[in-house]
Length: 361
Image 1: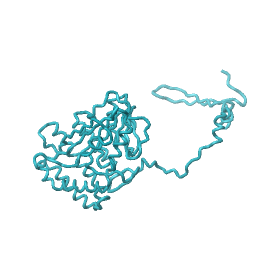
Image 2 (image 1 turned 180 degrees about the vertical axis):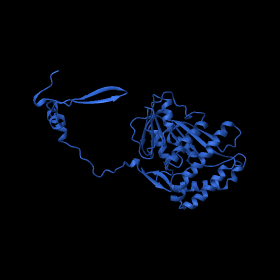
Image 3 (image 1 turned 45 degrees about the vertical axis):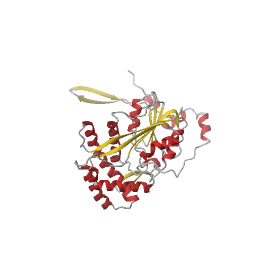
Image 4 (image 1 turned 60 degrees about the horizontal axis):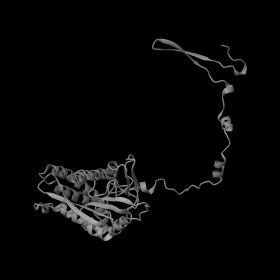
């Protein structure tokens, strides 16, 4: 083969090497200078700017130099060693840190046990199209519903963006305050809410708002605990510290402006908002492994763990921020409450309310 001559001649460098006892030779032949093109020349060779791009460039978008580094929905604050949401800060009693998220998922498991694996009790028609989950938390209920009803569009709203990014394709999450005006333009077939006790400042307004955004024939269902530790054998009175803590908590939440005891009134308030066929069912959630029934025993074992976690979640903001207790006072008191809840001779249970109704057609 004849090698190039003149100014375009290329020198080939031969580098011998040995690999696995086999001799070989690599030939590195640099590209001839005449064939290379610098970045500046490549840029010149490109086609001119399209007319549309030129037109858009004449109307540039102005950047906001005052934009905060982080979206307020993702901002957080810290109190008493716990993390809280910063969107609509101060409107919610509980933290949103990893510890609290684990508790939320445990609550979902407990409700699943209590409902025999069901997600709700309302007799919703088959094939719901749009479903709204208020106060979705970690989003676990919304995702389970989306899996069970793949043709439904499921929207979960919460003050905290703590939901997972990997979700069913028909499940969506939004950072929103359900006590603010709803901006949805399409009605829902089912509106669900769980554990919103202590989250609502005006439940009459909330039920009226839900009524407006339900399609005719659509259902609403609220599930919540009634925060009173009861017993059927008179042992509830032995839990003096736990009962005292609960009494103070209820007073603190009332002072906060969001009662924890709303569930007992929701049936009447749903009817007042216009719902028909309103039904209510109350089930017992045991605290501790004291029941003889195997299913209730399993439920009680998990609930004892969850109840202690709930005490640790509610206490900091209510007792410190609302009532002015010191951190030392809180720690000593919580230890006494924890001891009562672990006592196997005390047979407590928690009433869980399920209330559902239908919007007339």
